[in-house]
Image (tube, rainbow, N blue to C red):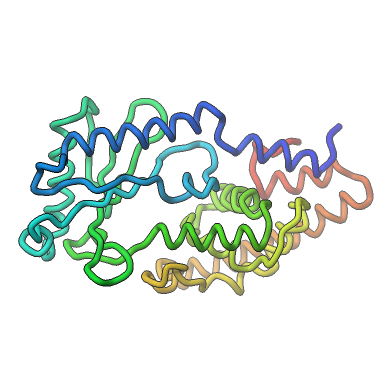
Length: 290
């Protein structure tokens, strides 16, 4: 019989991408750049500058199933095309990219999805392309807002902030983010993933490999860290999408999870790993070892 600590390690392996899934992420990112460079070469009126992996796949906090991969595609403001054609209509910018990709790929379905252009794959992860222009003389990038306007984002600053928090708190921060993301997915998925990761990275000064204790701390401290802000300083508070009813439900869920985690740790301390794992399984889902 495995101990509760061993069960957590096995569970982390279960929810982490496999080697083939990691390779699929790399392949999809590379293919996306190839398609974009063919569709928007230097001679184009909208030339591509670069493509980078962003989001949870870049931070290594992504969990199975790997449904989508995020990339940022920066375009060059050639002959001030941004002001001439897209400043007042970011939807036209998204449509231009979708049309260009349709002409250069064999992917049967390419669509716009809010702020992104999505490549739908039959197998493996889909790809969400966040197309941006670099703002003139300011930090950040202009990203289509979804309503025809623009918003400012900077995934690279966000990634740097996370790397700094990981260096300060320890490598276990990444595994902790995976555990919390799975907990969120099991229980109604009320949090957006990036919001949740910023909460975890902000609240812990250090994290050991004792994930049972860390999860108890997360459940205990979580309600006080819901109001975190975008580390890049552009999007303001990350909890603005949560309604009053959602916040009430979240606080109730934290309280229930905290009580159950205390019982699980107490069971482990008296040597009852079967009961401890049963309780953690309620919080972390059926993939957690029984």
